[in-house]
Length: 411
Image (cartoon, rainbow, N blue to C red; front, side, top):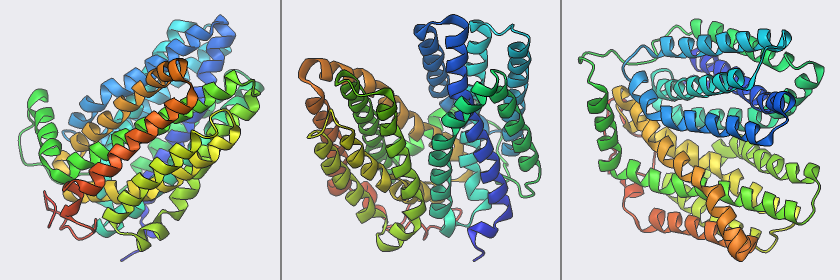
C-alpha cells in the first residue's frame, strides 16, 4: 500500500484545508482586534465571536445534506471563493477606513458558514481518496493540522495586525486563493457515482439522522465524543476564570490554552504509534478513564497554571482515539451518507460543548472551581462507563477490516 505521504490527492486536500485553517486562525483574532479598534466595545467583539460560533453550528446539518448532494470538489472551491471574496472586500474597506461593525459581522458569519461547509465536504471526501486501511492515519494527520494551525494562527494574526490592520485579511485572502488552486489540482472524484434522484432536504436529513441513531457504533461514538468535548471545554473555561480571579497575569493565563493545544499537536504525531499498540475498543476505554482521572486531578490545582498539565495530557490522548473512531466511521458509512453522518455527529459534539462555559460559570459561582472541574470529570466518567459497558464499540476492534462498500460494522 502506498504511503499516505505519497498520496497526491490526500496531500493536496490536506494542504488546501491547512491553508484554510491557518487563514481562519489568523482572521479570528484579527477580526476581534479590528472590532475593538473600531468600536472600543468588548461586547461588540463578543457579539462577533458568538455569531461566528452560531453560524458554524446552525449550518452543520444543512452542510451535510449539501455535500452529499453536489460535487464535493465544486463545494470546496465555492466555499473558498466565497471566503476569498468577502475578505477581499474587507481588506479594501479596512484600507479605505470604511469597515464598520456591520461589515465585520457579515464577514465573520459568512466565513464561519463557508468553513462549516468546507470542513464537512473535506471530511466526507476522505474515503474517496484514502484506502480504508489508512483512514485512521488520515484523520490523525487532520488532527495534527487542526492543532498546529490553532497554535500558529492567532499569534500570526496578532503579528500581522500590528504591521497593518488590513494585513491579516489580505493574508487570509491569499490563503484561500492558494487553497482553490490546490483543490483544482486534485484529479480523483471526491465522491462515488450517484445514481439516485436527490431527496428533499427533510427526507435527506432524516435518513442521515436515522442511520446514526440506529447504528450501534455511531450512536456510541456520539455518546462518547460529546461528553469529552463538553468536559474539556468546560474545564479550560473554569481554569481560565479561576486563574483570572486569582490575579494571574493575562500572559500566563494564555499559556494554559497553549499547553492544551501543544498536547493535542504532540498527541496527533503520536497517534499512529499509539494505535499500533492499542486497538479501537481498549484505546477508547483507556482514553475515557484516563481523561476522567486527569481532569479530577486538575480539581486539586484549580487556581494554578499547573492545572494546564493534566489538561494537556488529556488532550494528548484525544487524536489517537479520534483517528480510530472517525477512521472507522468513514469506513462503515456509505459514501452517499458521509456528509450527513459527519454533520450529525459534529453537531451533537459541538452543541453540548457550547453549553459548557455557561454551566462552568454557574457551578464556579455557586461552589467554586474545584467543584466545577469535578462535575466535568464526572461527565467523562459517564462516557467511560458507556464505552466499557455498552455494546456499540464491541461490534469491532479493528477500523480497517470493513469492505469499502459496507454500510454496517462486522461482528
